[in-house]
Image (cartoon, rainbow, N blue to C red; front, side, top):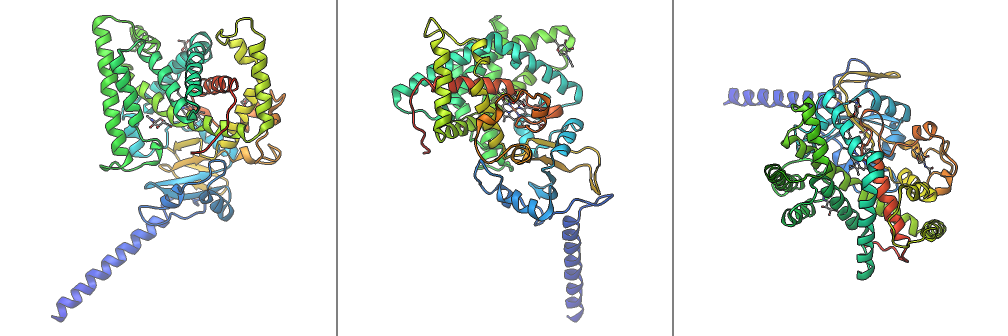
Length: 449
Ligand code: HEM
Ligand SMILES: *[C@@H]1O[C@H](CO)[C@@H](O)[C@H](O)[C@H]1NC(C)=O
Ligand SMILES: *[C@@H]1O[C@H](CO)[C@@H](O)[C@H](O)[C@H]1NC(C)=O
Ligand SMILES: *[C@@H]1O[C@H](CO)[C@@H](O)[C@H](O)[C@H]1NC(C)=O
């Protein structure tokens, strides 16, 4: 009996020892040099819960602020099972953005985009889709075609809102985005398919990037289901159109014309569908939220509101035909609106904008960041009083006459930087401007419900 008991003591001790060793390794990850300061939190869950606590959208989270105070601008943590380096050092963020290409997504987000998504593939494919996207959503295409579509859509939805007596900014932006992008992609779709696609879209829970585990009942599970349905509709529509020789929208036309130039191996129907789906997902997760915050900021600042109304009344007043569409020249002349949008992008960017997986070690001062770690860069430069006077104040006039090009953009990175700089930035700005233009034709009060 005694022997049996002793054996147990040995086994339990060994297990405890093993556990301690594992916990020690967890809190002190391998590194060939000195790791930046910080804590890896609890085994497996790390500091994920603290990180995910909801916070005021116009302020950095307490998670970030506390750790910045304790550790300085560069620290380590563990989130969603990944080893993470968080940086608020602007120079470092831009350097990483320019030298590292692999996106730092969690596994479930990669699944959501599709494992074969061209944005997540090799350098060559990634360059190719970026290039393709600039052809589709770059300023030439915006100028020639997209401006008219967005103008009509914004006008239509604003009139509808006026009739109803209220308008949900997020929802309306989301609708404008879906309708605009769907048309670009599919050309004229069968109304049935278009309706179903819109339904799938609605079915998506928002905030998908916060979900991490694919379990039934959780956000990711529902997202994957919605994704499958959406892909099926897109694919069926494409196949039907191909079979009947019907016209595609611009996106597919451009994508498939590329094919004839010998890029067959890069783009097939599956990849094209994945590619397009990426826009739906990213556009909808960013633009509506920022536009809603912008409208809120405008409504809280009567002087800004007044100046905007003056600018847009001026544009309407200068034309002979009241209901004519807006031109590219009109868009370019909305200087104050552009200042408002820049200022809103500056002040609402309280989330990381450079997200990379490090595929080789990097030395930062005394510290070494090992390969395999995820890098998250926050644009805290937006709140640096040396770059922006009184940085917490919403003051569009600070942008006045600031056509400083490179100097401004170094201290202004709402769309990220480097190899993965947002490809939808100009499109998003155009949409926001159009929305504000049409909004300014009405009197409104802003409410949070
Ligand atoms: C105000 C709205 C938007 C904001 C703040 C925003 C912000 C960003 C940021 C921070 C990145 C990552 C950059 C990096 O990792 O360095 C990004 C990438 C991207 N964005 Fe946007 N975005 C917006 C609107 C859009 C829209 C409307 C679209 C599409 C129509 C879009 C498509 C993309 C794509 C495809 C990427 C990945 C680019 C790549 O991996 O090469 N974004 N965006
Ligand atoms: C991007 O596309 C344009 C026009 O098709 C082409 O001239 C250019 O060489 C491409 N650039 C890259 C990097 O592929
Ligand atoms: C798009 O955004 C709307 C409103 O913000 C949200 O209700 C919807 O679930 C989102 N859809 C997708 C595909 O993210
Ligand atoms: C807005 O920011 C961009 C990018 O930094 C800059 O080039 C542009 O001049 C700014 N626009 C205005 C109206 O200040």
